[in-house]
Length: 232
Image 1 (cartoon, one colour):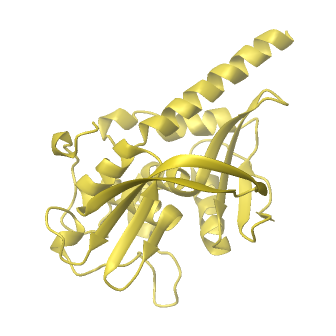
Image 2 (cartoon, helix red, strand yellow):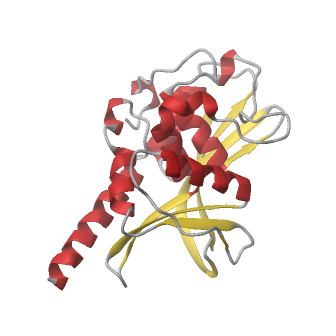
């Protein structure tokens, strides 16, 4: 689905309505978005996911290659493709183009209010993972790692609450500070395969996912399975 014109993503008329598409979109915005009074920018490393977000909310996608410090260790840098979706107030053709409500779903005190998406927590968590999460294979232990990293501690506390309420038992480590001054936590390695599998289960039905992130999960699960086989 790399061609935005080929996407057929179902979206509601209200950007804050309880819907799978809005849950996925706002998860991405909270995880990797920059919100101002009249503009939203959402950054993703997956082109197809960027086009899905554009199909939901309108706007334009720009591509560039960036080099940045790794969140857990600022002595390490990585170069990767970056796709930025820019959505202005009044853009045509998408969710936000039909409304003046151009802001994160927060209450008057600045607290996130994702209650409208309580029936779509899997899509919300998937958007959050793709926005501020990582999936990796830990070669030292032969396990799959899933973690969330963000400057906003309160957002990560909300993510922890969402994971605790999901139907898969997924214990988590404590919130810790990163070397760059942000915060992070990880799902316990023993629970990561089941949690990751649940998170991407049946995602093709809606198209609300980043194919590269799902491939990363599948590859990591395969590597962990092969490692177990080597150990036995």
